[in-house]
Length: 259
Length: 235
Image 1 (cartoon, rainbow over the protein chains, first blue to last red):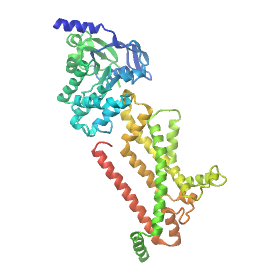
Image 2: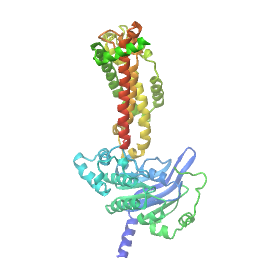
Image 3: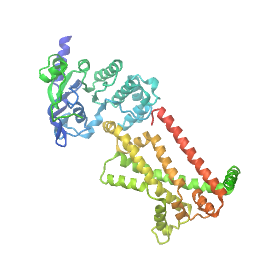
Image 4: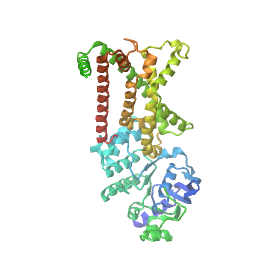
């Protein structure tokens, strides 16, 4: 059974990446915040982007989602240059949930409407999202009155309600307690089981172990190491990942800063 | 002193008796100002939302212009509208001078920049919070604008109130383009100015009291509404 799982995993690893970056870099003015770097995000797997504060994790995930435009290099989406339209097949959850000043249901409805989901299909999707977020009882409550954990559950459910191929999450549990963190991780696992590709930014090694299939380890805006989570997290090859995982604090090299 | 208290008492009795002359003036005042505020909102809210949510060439100029126009003295607006509406002006053929419509036009010109400039600030702040989420969802321009205006609705109430307060209290513009004609273009502020100069303090005081009560009532209503909105985390 284990062999089968591993060989399946290998099969996926060698599969065509849903996204890839080539010579990607991003900067403002004369400062380079990220890159140049190369990486691949494989379909149906969960890729965890790790690294210290300022390593460029948030910049990278925004570049991949098209919220930032690379200064150099290229991002490929299904083998072709990433265009704004691709964003409609992706979704993103931010560290601080951005919820509209409306009810829980109103937030879901807005997302579905702007994503062009037909009115007839919306009700079922709304209910599914409410169930997934375990917020059916609170559907008419103002979204911003929910606890921070509930807000983030809603944000994840809202993102998933739009049926994305790829779900980006930028440190979604950074300000949550352990129970809320596990609830978010359960939502992520469920999405992955449904075939959604996950790209998660975290600086929590435990979360990376729980969630990640692949790990991209960033240091000072460069990829220090990337590979299978089981390899990178247990036997890191790069000195940066080794130091970080052993608990050492490393300062980002001078001249590179994250957002 | 006795004149003051006497006038005050008579003013109160005018209000309590619901004096027809008083009611007519109050009615016209509200009609002119509320209509102007509605037009001001129709122009100012979208304009402010566009300036607050989008980047486009000329945006800084627009914002500076709106902020500057916010402080434009009503008499100057009155003069400009007067010139436009006078028989030799571009809108002369419409024959609108000394009509309530002229007063509505003048007050619309007065309140539109106020509503637009304050809306821009409110919408820009909210957009700062929503921008990445909107970009992620791929929210189109129209949806973006309407969503921002809707979500800022309670803050915008205060904006509209500011416009209303400014318009209902101003005298300079309406007296120039309206002419303060009895039964036609006499509103509260122009009537107060006239009646005071005639020494007819009772009516002036009565109108002054109505204006004050109006200001208090509208402010209290908006404050209560905002407080409940804040409790519901909608503001």
